[in-house]
Length: 489
Image (cartoon, rainbow, N blue to C red; front, side):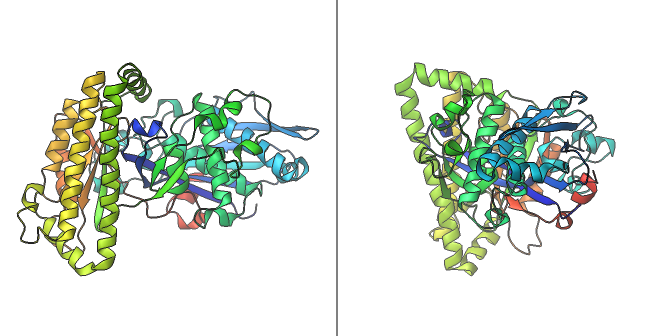
């Protein structure tokens, strides 16, 4: 077998814009995570054009597909011997191959697939709860304990029974698989996933959006796929109508709809990253919430109380835009005067937010901007709670409010909230991360609080913001534990 094609795609955290991101009139602030999904594709040397897809982190997670061709069509059908079905994988294979046939021709695609194909897919440990792994090793739920676990740890359960943490596993999986297949089938060059925004990356985005929507049976906002493709950004969604003919399963050519040159793909990816010397912290809160039912109730309330809802959403949108603007401003301030910025972060990291405004440097633009971030995140939380009360949905339940209030009162914590649609399943925090500090770091204070917290079952995640932009080509040997996790066909 030759050199494998390896493509990774990150998870996501929507730190502002929950619910609003469903409407193209508003935007969401999405941060891509250091936790990634990896797809490894190898050509086999068999005499059949079988495709074998493996997910070695789970039991009964091998799916064989038979490739057949009639005239100018190439189809992929699950083997009847498969122990389980995987709709997401099957649709990703079929739709990507269909697109490849339209772009490259059936003979080219059949030739590439003729010797058989092995595909292994694994996700970083943060996509799944590691409580059982830690308990089995008698380890406390700390960042240090998590760092000791084997990368891409075996879960011991079937895929359908795994406890997810809300980082967008299905979007990251689909994006890594679709992007890797597009490269493998020579529809896009590898450079599409080593460079920034380009036509190849946008083709991967559009196809991944369609496959993800089709597999879920609905057209969502798409911010999770966009984060997997482009990384952290300010996201404005595409109109659902662009893929409606394909969602209705009409017999229409795929490429004209999916093509980046189709102007109906009117999503927008705005520049965004978290400020230097800060760290996003995430925790999985094991109480559970059903995102689709939360979204359904909020949208029903918006329809029935349009004037009230629109006024609240306009206010929230203004706050979300202010948060994005201020966070970006901090990056500019760092580039203008690195030393002054570091001095502020180092000093403020040991103080609670209530003490920031009393600093002698309180008129300093850096501390002023951080105070604005703090106040804006608190205002967003308040408005999200107000929306939850109006539509009787636990967007930030009282238990989460108590936990977040305890966290944001700690020295060195800038702000936080419940990501995405909210509910009981996660929180995010932004903390100072000063360089070379000999004192207790804000992240360590937060970790101590989470470990001792008793009112909710809190487990940290290792993930932070990904500095790499979205989906990318990888080398198998460069990713710790990946070669061992995917094994050989």
